[in-house]
Every structure is written in C-alpha cells, then in structure tokens.
Figure (cartoon, rainbow, N blue to C red):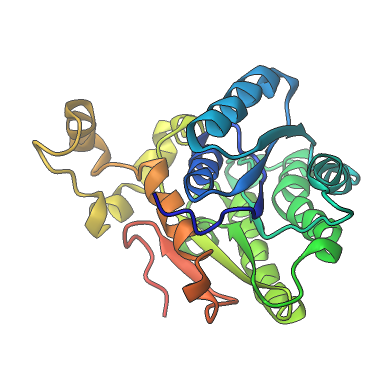
Length: 281
C-alpha cells in the first residue's frame, strides 16, 4: 500500500465523526500520523476508540485531543497539546491542517438571534483563524505544507434560513485566499465546498429547509441516484428529496487530492466537493 505521507503529521479539527472522521481515515491510510480533535466530553470515548482503530489498522500514531476551537484559547490549546505528543528530537512540525469543525444554526431572518450569530462565527470563523495562527510557527518552510478549510455551497447559494451559516462559510473562503498569500512559503491553502453530506448535521435539517434546496438537488449531476448501485433506502428517499447526499468518503477524497506533492501549484482556491451543485468559474 502506498504511504506517501509516512512520518508526516496531520491535525483534523472536528474529527470524531462525519466528514472530519472520513478525512482522518483518508490521511491515516496514506501513512500520516494524526491529531484527532474533538470538542465535547461526550466524544471522549468515541474519539479514543477511533484513534485506536486508525493506529492499529494503518500502523500510524493517532492521538485524540479535546479542545473547543470556538473559544479564545481553543486553538492555542490544541496546538500546545499536539506539541506535547508529537515533538521528537526537539522538532515539531505540522504538515497538514484540516479546519473541519463547524456548526449550523438555521433560522429565518426575523428569528436569528445574536447568540446564534456569535456562537456560529466563533466556531466557524474565529476558530480556524486562531488554529492557523497558533499553527503558523510550526508549518514547513519549503511550501510543502497543506491547509484545507471546509467551506460549503451555502457560501454562494443563498439558501433560505442560512444568513448566519452561509456568511461564516463565505468568510472562510475569504480567509483561505488571504492565507494562501501570507503563508505561501509554508503551505498551500485551499477550501472545499461540500453540499449535502450524509451524517448527523444533514439529518437535523428541517422539512422546510429540505424543500427549499429540492430544486438544487434535482439539478446536481452526481446526486442522481442509481438503482442497483446506491442502497435501496437511499433510492427510496430520493423520490422525495430529489437525490442522494454525498458519502463522507467522497468529500474526503476531494480533500485528499490537495495534499499530494503534485497539488503544490494549487492554492487560494475553492474546490468543488458537491457533485456539481455549484460550478464556480
């Protein structure tokens, strides 16, 4: 099995489940050592089990680290803990950083609260900024580093009820372009923009929200279900939803394209990871 990331260190925020977990496994399968970041104490045991599984399956070192990146000290605490676990011969380097952790609080404009705004921007925007700030001194100095920020189609689709969430993802994309310039000697910096993806966040969407995106789903080329290929329950559900969501491993595969050495000439970009729901120029 090819292990192009042998000996490298990757940090994935929000890695205990969903897209983050799929990205972590993709990295591990390439030989990358990992920090599995999670926020809630309820995720302590699952994260430890996940890290153990990755370590034994892929013969890498995976360490779960609890840190709430939505707090002023969360990013600094995460990087400090990573240093404690992965410093060897007085050397600590972060080769790959995936800013995946995020939350969504959907509401129509009259119902948006200040608390919704502040909480979502703290996790989705301030969090990645402070993580990258804390990580910067430990990035490579030969352009070999890779930073990938998880955005969303919501940054450009104007979905109803996503004044706040869509705004945070647009901010992530703006920061991606700035960091691509500021960190050019350290790492490429790109974003990927998933659409609907299987998992707990997608399942929390209201019927009203799903109705609102129905037209988008119908016109997304790769969300069309295939009988005999896709699971029967997905085919059945698509009769109402219009199509299937992405599998987490499919989004992880797009992210995975960006950390190869051959991807070193791509930076400051928003890369499609949504089956063609959004086609950017």
